[in-house]
Length: 131
Figure (cartoon, rainbow, N blue to C red):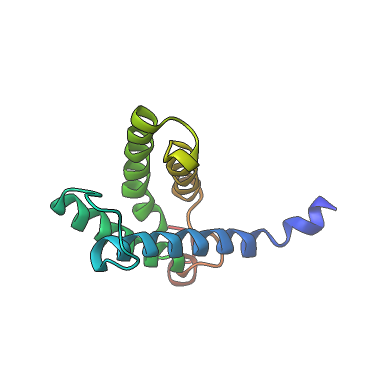
């Protein structure tokens, strides 16, 4: 049974990569364009533009599977710092803005840092390998 399911691994990997990328794009547009409206006083202005640009551009690249590993590095740093900050001030659970949510994203981008975008990515299509 598991060998039958394993043949769908490239499609599921792409689905996970696309979902992660789209979610990052949404968070980036929230910071850059104010849609949907971010909470007041969310981040200092320079950091807001930096993270918003990273999340928007990087989210598109990750969803497409283009420069997947290089884009995973700043995301891993951002999500690890975010997880630390949330753990320090808000605890564990996501419904209290805790570490749970950014920690999940940090583990997700760590996966793509190690494995790349997979066989159904633009990296693989253009370079012949996961990058």
